[in-house]
Image 1: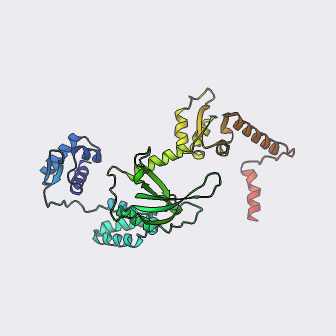
Image 2: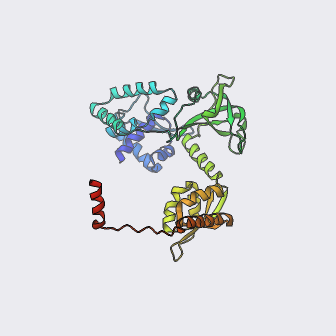
Image 3: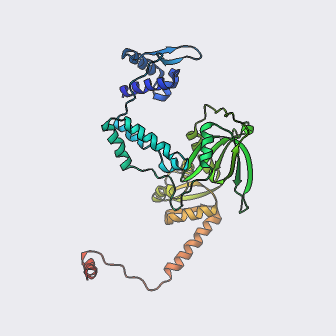
Length: 361
C-alpha cells in the first residue's frame, strides 16, 4: 500500500508542481504528517523532492527531473481502456481521435499489458443510451463541445418547455459553457450566465442540448476565465439531487410491512426514500412501519404505491386513501363475484405425470 502511495505522490508532484502538504494529504487520503514522512522516503530513494515555504510554496521535483514510474501495469491498462463511452465520443465528433489515441497507446504497451487491455475491451461494453428510445446526437453538439474545450462564450437560442401543455418559449442567452453531461442517452450542457453570477444559484444553468435551436459565437474571441473551484461531477450530482427533491411537492403518510419497506426503493424516487426513512417510526408489534413519504403528486403516489399491493396502507391524505379503497372494492368485485371457483391444482409428482405425458404426445 505504501509503495503505491509513494508512486502516486511522485506522479502528483510531477504533474502538479507546487502542491502543498494539505493538498497532497487530501489526494492521498492521509494526514499531512504522513505526507512529510513520504516525501522524506522519496528523497532517500533518490527522487529529488524538495519543499518550499511561503505563499507560493509547496512540493516540487528538481528542474528537468522526470520519474520513470509511468509504465502501466495490466490492471491499470484494463481500467484505462474501459474509461470511454464509444457512443458519447461519436456524438462529440471525437471517435476518430479516440481511435487514433487508442492505437498509439496500444503501440507503446508491453505485450503482456497490451493483451490485458485488449481483453478488457472484449469483456466489457459501456452502453449509455436509455432503453426504448432511438439514440440521436443533437446536431449542434459537436460545435458546442468545441466551445467547451476552448472555454469560448456562446450565444444560444433555447426552446424552453411550456407549462401545462403550453408551447415552448424561445430564449436567447449568452453563456459560458463549462461542461457536457450525458445522462441516460440525453446530453446536457452546464453553463454559467455571466450577468447572473450574483443570483442565488451563482448564475449556473443546465440546458438540454437537443432543445438548443441555434448556436453562435458571443462576439468575442477571448476565452472566459473558468472558476478553478468548479467540479463538474460534484455540481451535477448536487443539482440532480436538488431537482429531484424540488419535484416532491406532496407528502403522504403510509404504513408498510417489512416486505413493503424493502420494495419501496424500487417504486419511488431515491431522494424520496432517503427523506422518508429519516421520519420512519419504529416497527409496531405487528412489524409495521409508519412514515411520511414525499411524492410528486397524489396521482403519481397512487400509481407508485399501487405496485406494493397489500404491503402498503395509505393513512393520509384522506382523498388518496379513498382512491385505494375504491380500487380495492373494484378488485374485490371483479375477482370475488365469480361463483365458479377454480379447483386448485394438485401438486406432487402424481399430478405432474399426466401433463408431462401429454406434453410428450
